[in-house]
Image (tube, rainbow, N blue to C red):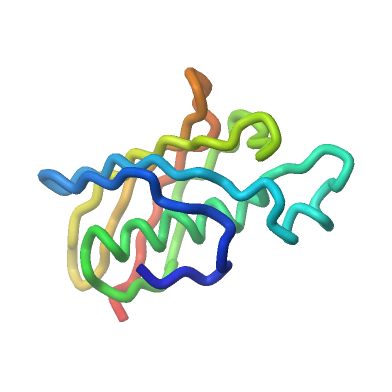
Length: 123
């Protein structure tokens, strides 16, 4: 898997069955991206979460993707890598008209942190 931001996260588990991905990732709380993003209380940047979802979807589909639209993004809880190092992602996806449409959730422990519906153009 190709990652844009090296060493930000590590995939601990990855299952891809019937167009549904279930992945567990571990955040690197010492990554330099957190130095400038609220250094006193680190917060996972939303754009980095979307990039992670894109990369996991690319792995599932074996296709290079480009985010073309998001119809629904809900940040429901702050992801603090000092407190919430392990994230659980579920991505359901379908290929329609040369694009991959996804529905995604991201959670830590029993807290739902992010919901996202997006369309990725196949490159």
